Image 1 (cartoon, rainbow, N blue to C red):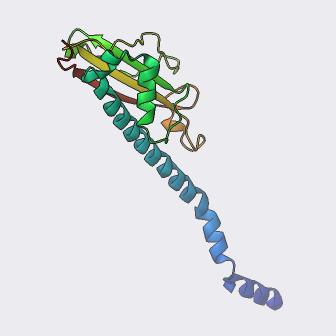
Image 2 (image 1 turned 60 degrees about the vertical axis):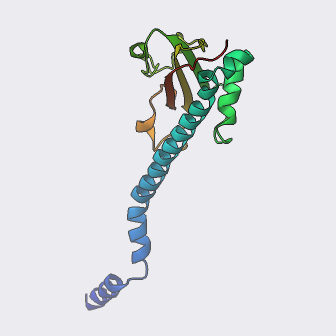
Image 3 (image 1 turned 180 degrees about the horizontal axis):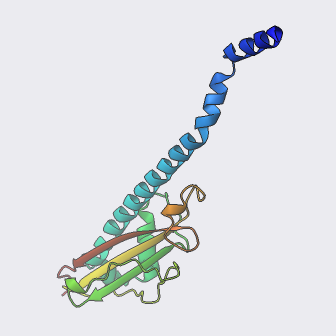
Length: 177
């Protein structure tokens, strides 16, 4: 019994593996927090980049350059994509809605997500308006989350993606003749 007590006492005072055990206990929550924080930061950065792109691209509509050059939705999409610094791919994940409004109060800036969590672009159009018209530019991007398992609460679409939105509502300048 004495021998067993000595072995147990020697084993209990051993400290060589304590750091590894402590790290194993806190590693999972630590990495969960770090990757979750990185995901949120990435969402904020991409949202800001999208807002900048919409602001710069919609300037062409506001000043009449787009209308006088005969811009189509494809041309406007190219203009938006050129302002995103190559950070986001401008493929089928980018959705554009440009509509002439009757007044500033008529602007609908709600997220176009149906009850099932699917993206709904059924009412989208490309109507840049003419001089002195009020125009709403809404651009949406379906962002694929980097850490889908960790950032499940950030997904606002049924397919596990997060819908980023940037909007601009303005009165066109008095361009043209």
